[in-house]
Length: 536
Image (cartoon, rainbow, N blue to C red; front, side, top):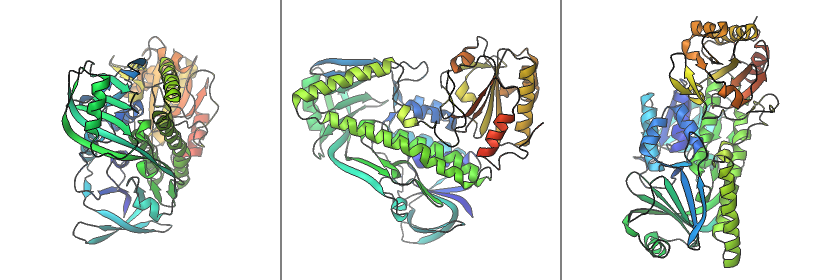
């Protein structure tokens, strides 16, 4: 019997399949369409997806295909209302990369793991029991196939058949607003490719560059099959020096704000757009779905592998549903702003928005925090928040550069992109306590039989503790010569952290001499993970 059936090969379904496949889970992924989508829709790739791409092994590929945006300008009433520049030391504000360009990258990665998408297959009905799910698949010729799996995952979009059959509510509303996505060339465009423009005079017009054309998002109060004509007139007013070329593609879709009442019913779970419908005004629907898949993937793999009981899957909804709600609210708030009809109130509202947006970026915001979600209250975020630095439920910062023992530079998040849980030790200059801590951690990793990885960050390779790590596995040792990483994380002496497979901190224990507390935390969260929960 196959472990998992994934229905839907959009971004969230593909990411979920990759996360399962790279952990050795037996799966099938189907899609009713005979080919991958080629029409543009989702476009903005946020830093949350950069984190995911690093773990998935496709970070270089998405940056090769996309155009990084370092600055965003908002124009209103004929002048700049705000100019915001990304403050992140590593990531741009976002990447211009359409869903139609991202999907082939994800497909190639999935195929490299030995999994092929079965196209032209539609899930028409299913039944579940305590032991598994029997799904009925129909092909293009009308033939049916019964498939038995342990788990069924619906990544089948806003109109999800799986969600509806499970009786899961999809609460919210549809809007009168319509988004349009136009691809065309623009002659005489005065801005660099890494500069995004938002014109707020006519509802909203956002203009970005791709590798091959310009992609223009616009909003209207009514459905329109031809956004090119209205955009031609708008650009003539706001940017008279440019000329809009003929449409390459022109897609329209209605705004919605809906959230699933549940993300799981027994052995059936939903993911991505099946969980939430949000306006393009949030610029994060695809990014939110990818984070859903990253969260669900490692948890489902842990359950299937016997490293955790299925109660772990309940934390998928408790962690990801609030993030979906937050992004729906962002989109709704923006749509309400864009469509304000009274000119005086609209002017005031947009000016407030621009000032707040500028201040947000100036203070280090990059727009991905709500997408990522805050898991501090999760049952698998253990311990109190530290006074300095990130604590349980928080992602490890993505811009901390360290060095391998051979001197090669590496970012900490890259070193933590294992498919499994990781024990992360920061031991500063070492000492007897650090050596004891490292020895206990090495013993812990050994008894996990591949279910735990180890990363140790030391000031140099000279201390006894660092040399012990080198004897164990030289790839497990990272060097922080100026203690920048230690200081950034707020670690004065040494610390033992459990890093979840999604790059989140599961627990953080500062100033400890042994691994006992971390071991107990892992054993409580994953009863089947460790062969021996008590180590000497």
